[in-house]
Image 1 (cartoon, rainbow, N blue to C red):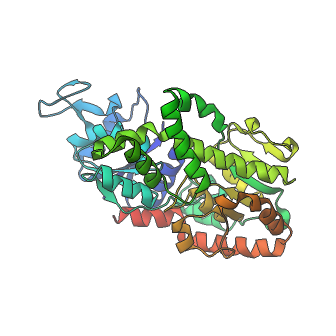
Image 2 (cartoon, rainbow, N blue to C red):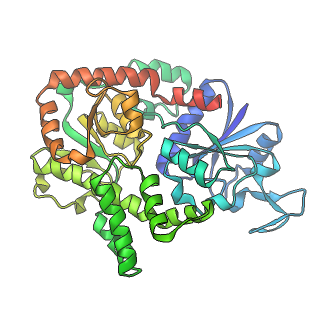
Length: 415
């Protein structure tokens, strides 16, 4: 089997994930073509020659390279038309490429993209609720079993451009710092936006719609263990009535700002409560200077950072805080990366995580509905350095054996 991955020209984080996948595919002995997505690419003739040689699978993220990018349309043998003009066909369709699209967000964000898919399209979700949504509103689309993304460490990020031999030689050179050597008490990696900035979207259609939106938010604030699928669909059907799968998908898409609103609400609340208890929190990501806290001196903003810099921050942290983007049957790669960086992963729970891990064994759980207890929990951990080290060591060992990109690619390539 041969593979195409997008090396550059897409979102930085997704480009990093792609580079990890390419590296591990090559380690497993597969031939990989790394394509840089840009309008004036000089790689296209080489890509075509690669596709002409036989069976190929494209692995991409969030529809990159399979959604109306003009460079991937060429003259086909048939006379069908599409939005780019007569006789043009998607390159992947011409050469019968299997397109595996790993969707790292809830599929509701990509309502329009589902209208124009490659002929041999396969999707993988990273959360079980996302997979259930797909089965309900897009039952015709082929799915791989849902699987969370892998974790990474600064060592991993620093070896992507090395040969396998060089990588193996450097393996023993990177060992996570011990707790006493780490300079951050708590770190968080991810962007922030004050949820109040979404209020114009809530009020734009008048009082009736505003009440509808507020009721959804209030339920999710009150019962944060409930999943988006269940809450959104119930409120939609109570207010609109029965809908076809296509109509339901459209309605979900119009509510996507509520998903972001809730995510930033809890993300901000977790960090605010920690800082206001006197704990210094190092945040890597855009927007954190806009968080309102009574203890701004405890909020250390490092600004927007690339993946390698975020991993370096986790490697300096005793505790890595995680607030999941409403994954209730999955896990965020931030958790696994925290383990591989040698930090204690302090995360909210999901049904998936509670099946996979034991609290205070490989990581530590807190509950979103009990955020008032988060500062006390964090302080207790910080006061028990030896206990933290034991949790971090167990988490690191488990992640190194089970949660790496190599394990991820082994499973994906066998699908």
